[in-house]
Image (cartoon, rainbow over the protein chains, first blue to last red):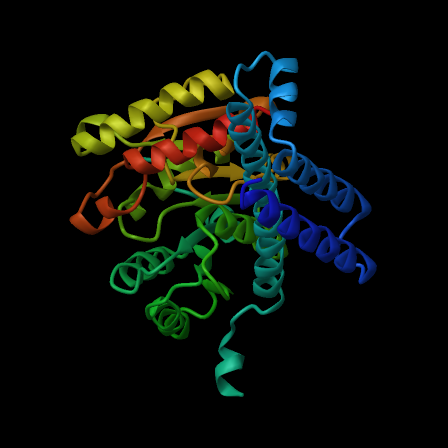
Length: 115
Length: 234
């Protein structure tokens, strides 16, 4: 067995426990727990049984198991970036609303200077 | 140009000026507008220089003509315009003009852009800058933006990126502006077109200085606007 067969499952288990703890503290949604747990379970399976990736690769018509893992990582990263983009976009909109509201509620008049 | 606006119409005209880091340029613009007897709503968009102090100084000279709102942080010209459009409704305006505060627009053109609104020929006016007056890079970026505005928003105008525009209160109540940055120019044209608001293009003078050229639609801004236009399609 290779070193990564030990390290990756340990990292995965720690991550899953971390996600569950965050869920119990109300910081994660159930869907986040399911998606991330599934991801880390796949990491465990790929680490302990490297041939497992080849089985998946064949299902998707990819020759090598390693290629499948690389493509999968790219897809996940792309999804994360897209999700972050939408979150930031929403936060920008919220920030704009606050800035506008503050400006509209505080018209600057000469009276302000006299006070 | 022979058109002269009546005092009554002038009283109900408000000019919205978004301002970001314009401490060296804004004062002559606003004081010239005030001298002409127009009222204005200035939105300081979180300037990091002394723009706000300069505007306040002018307000002391023309307290009845200048109304100031200030963003606590910089949010872009689109958001400043949104604040301006919301603020102006408090003063019960009949005509609303929007121009740049950096001095690239001539205050003398105010009556020219208002003429189609006052005479009832149009409800919205776009102040079109002569392409021959523009620097080459700016001209190229504008040509791209006109083409993109035609493709994405299906409106054909000679200057889609102008910051000089005017509209009636009825037109303002019909349109909805949501963009944050320079996309506001194309969005304004799209909204006018989608709401069947009769509009005219009026030729305006443009005063280009190295400082005014540093802002506005250059090629990188054009690319950002294009990305936002594509995003808006979904």
